[in-house]
Length: 612
Image (cartoon, rainbow, N blue to C red):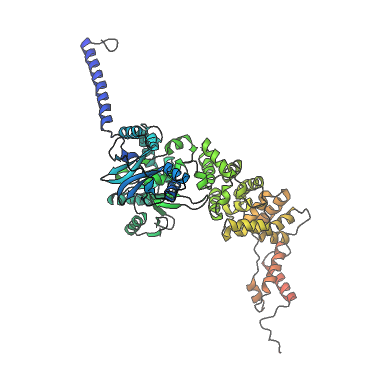
């Protein structure tokens, strides 16, 4: 038939033929692409390395390993040979019979079904379904190299976004976004350092990945200079080799298998081995073990932080996203990786609130539910004060810390973060006022007020001295923060009472009162004060704070007086006269200084010593 409304019949026929050929070629191309795209195999979805046990291990010990790592079974090795598999059900059976002290060899399944690294997803499905088993060890050249569970198969087919059919395109888009931000947002020295790390990793036959916050933020088009690198190998050895090549100092932390490459005063790179971890109790620091990249990402707090970007030249920018972080990043969701996340580390709920506010995200329904449960269980009380301090400092470094505190208050988590006796509502109000007051007064203060220090003072403004000191000691605040916090409960309270008193106040009294407090305390006094308090503080800042006397100790020496400890008292009186307006200007102040010195009976330098 014809194409269009006219034209030569043969031309129309030729056009139709060309169109059908093009459609056929497109179908062939799609089929070829489908054929050359390798199917998922055991090596793609297995968990590795594998935790194993020996035949002599007790059932109790095997059960503890499974409980610690959340496994349902363990391969049993004698030397390097696979001789059986023991499951959690086997442990339960041993416990019921009072035989948890017995060795694994008496309970393990000896007829172990195994798979090979090259087995396809379809063959693995058939194997597990036909045999009715929950897991299968994966073998390569007679060695156990991984394990595939029913969960792995479900994730591969239906679950985690990195394994579904849409992911190649999603990953392509994510890689483009990441590489664009990598080139535009990172300074040249940072890009060069990361590129060099990738090249070195490739030359050693290992993979290096950027992980965590820097991946999240570059995908969002935000700058982040906290460079965290995961190596699928020995991180300390690798970091030392990088340091030797670039002439940088390396600080190893052998307990955790990590190292810091100190590139400059303001730029360092954290390098870790791919690892997994477990917690001995809520709020404790984790115990870590060497592991795979996937397990390393699984130990992180939220899906949006559980992504990695390859930095090897052959895969630069390729995103590993085993837990749906890209999806949650697009949807604006903060989601934990598992139900015990806040139990293992309760400070994660503080970070969840922080990320919600910073990015305009929201916790998933399940995440918020288990966050509230963690608060009800008072798990934050199990966390060390030093870790609470770090989270508080991170919150107060945010652009809108008040909103983060409001979110924590909505979760009923704020009470555990403020000093005893301080009501969360008061702390919220004081922090909000302190934040705006710091911005308003910062240009007029005689001495700069630290922003975070001001917010910490505001948080504790309702505390007694004893409560403030206990809080400072509990969260282990340094002197630069502790001094104004305790100072508000002492000098600050005294100043607050006097400033609120409607009776007249002398200029020199006002000066001495406010000159003695830290600038952070001054900001908070103004922030929470009434009209009279604010008026008097403003008068001090505008008219008194920067008054400098025109005389000094050198003038007393010039007047012929011998050096004396009493100079400071006389100069203080001279300053009072200057502040009160009784002696203003060099001549008037010098004359007043001479009168004060004579009245004090200072010893003159030319006066002969008295005879004894």
